Image 1 (cartoon, helix red, strand yellow):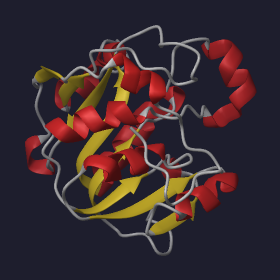
Image 2: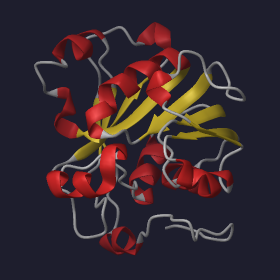
Image 3: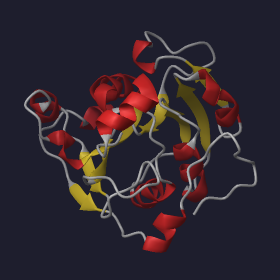
Length: 219
């Protein structure tokens, strides 16, 4: 998800709206949120930036299933995930062969135009759902009925991330976290400000690509 230069960039990137997620955004969230161990799904896996970033800092055992709609990312994802599927996550009626029927955690940075259907599908399949979204995503007439019924906890990223390596985005971002199903149906949630990330660390981050090696370590 990105708002900076959307018309130009989406024309180049196509319907996948692929924007690599800076690892430091993931680090600050994982350090704060108390997510469980177990089987995690990245439904919009890209080249695996979120998976790598979680693995950098999490202290609990995680078994990764990565899904991505673009087949060219499969080699990169297989370096990081225990299982990989190439499919349209929103179209899942049941998980594809090899995928669990239920996940402990689903975490992703969804394409903006598909964020709501991805959120709703994720809530069907996981105990905890974490989505990286624009902070103002909660403010919309169309989305008001959903958020009045399923309000997440919101973890605000203090610094605006860069999704293209060419400067910070034009808007603030946050992690939206829905917890266990029996606690989701509510009209109020909490909001927290995550820790700052030094400028040097933010500038040093480079997204994963097809040249990723098993030895690569991200800040």
